[in-house]
Length: 236
Image 1 (cartoon, rainbow, N blue to C red):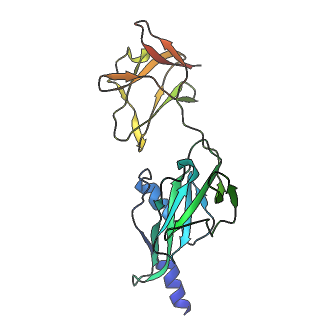
Image 2: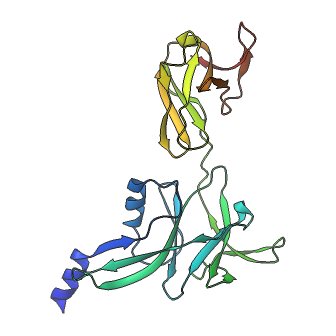
Image 3: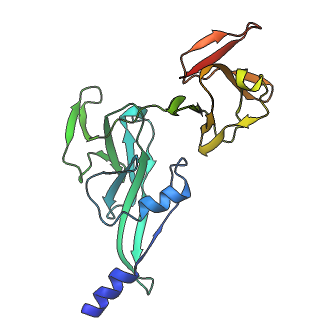
């Protein structure tokens, strides 16, 4: 018996269906899934919330207040197997990227069509608009990323939008040539570029194709010499 326990704990491996959250890249997915070993309270890991549920239903879904409870997101099944490919544990999970600029998330589970609070989470709160109890979880505040000055003589340019775009950068520091720098899509729909710049005030715009547009994460604006509106940033 002791030998079997050692085999099971040292040789188990994990299998799971694909994530329904497209924004989670494969590296982050594998890392988060590897940390799921049992059901329990929602767990906060690296900017994500991991929800779990017992595998005693045909389907488990989840709805959130920040989506007005309009979308049911399906949990995925996670099987832990031994060396003989036998399932030794099975549970459901769902991983949510924590929304920005929020500190509390209210949600309900949908278990085989029945809307209910989360049996793994004792914290609930009555929602008068929905006229029912909601499960709640407090999360760390994640501020919306903006174009900023992360280090001396360095600007970190940020753009958020649809996936698969080619967002270029041009400004007074390139003589308005937008072919020199392109922001990198570091996660789906999130683009960034870190650029060293000496002290001074700079005017810039983002470009895609023949179109140009301002940086919506930066409220500082000004007119250029030719009458265009451009974003402005000052390196001190």
